Image (tube, rainbow, N blue to C red; front, top):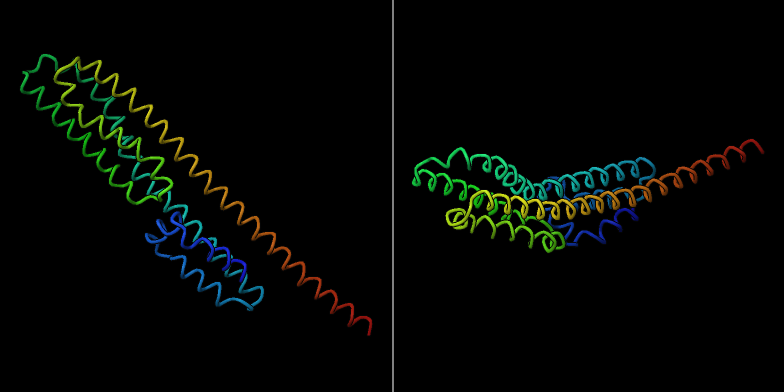
Length: 221
């Protein structure tokens, strides 16, 4: 338990931990307190401690994914709507100009709202991930902010093709960053749980060895 407590205590103040732990019901500090209370309590205490750590790590992984998705999903929505709206260009080209302006204004506002939502969600991710995603999200926000002016003054189909291409490039970069983050989390979990599993097996082997010694001593009497 002291080992587990030491591992978690060493990372509890890291930004990548505190950023997500504050949104979790099962706080890391509570887990560490549980571990400290189980020191010296034998196998039962070890099992409970490992369970507490496992539960927190799984909750942490889920919270990281949730906060990342709050950035990613609005941008995915913009990409999907750009594809759908592009098909309306020819449908609406015979509309009165005031109706066209109204439609494109509404769409541009919707794009901007989604991009702003993704931009706001950046505040809830860790500093390292923020530094990697911030530029891409800002590009999306900048692109949709000037979308209306471009659409009113240039060929709509070209504007949509260009915007869609840019959006796909940005999303590809975001997906790569997010995927690398998820791989890093999985690596962390595997590394530490493999270590815990090995210590647990060693603990059981030592206990079994002691039991065998006691039995042999009894037989030898």
